[in-house]
Image (cartoon, rainbow, N blue to C red; front, side, top):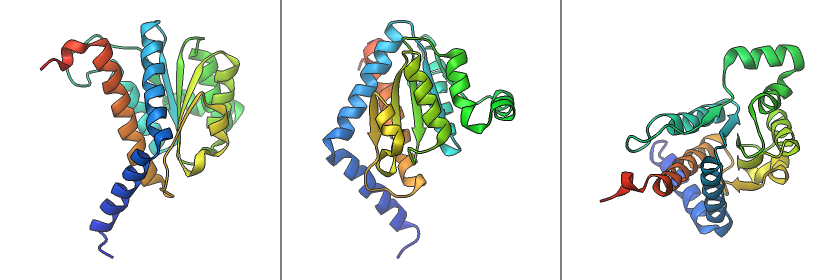
Length: 195
């Protein structure tokens, strides 16, 4: 095995499996539709995840508030990633509550929560999804390993097929996030994509 080439081949196989599964592409289309609808109605895009998935949640949020392709108005998005809030909530209520409390604090009916979990089984992700549902907040799950318990709690669940390791799953997750941002931006700011 070539330790450099083989991971690229594995990544390509994962992406090809994703593209070959109509449920995956339909999930991405539904995610883009929900994100666009949320922003058009004045809602906020909320995102959470653990470890590398938190980094993806932060990346997702900053693309909306900053610049993606070209200059445009800032759009409301936030990741639940503030260390002081996370550690305060974890200290006071336990780590399982860190995202659910943020959903409670910031989420409103009409918002969209994007929960990112390579396993679909992280207790703090499950509680955030449950809290969002109770508050009338729509949910998208970017998941792996079959989707876990999180899949049943999502309005739209996108499960990366084939991959069994977090790195391969996360590589597809970031592609999905970028593609959704581009799709929504093309609709809301078509001049940014004029030839």
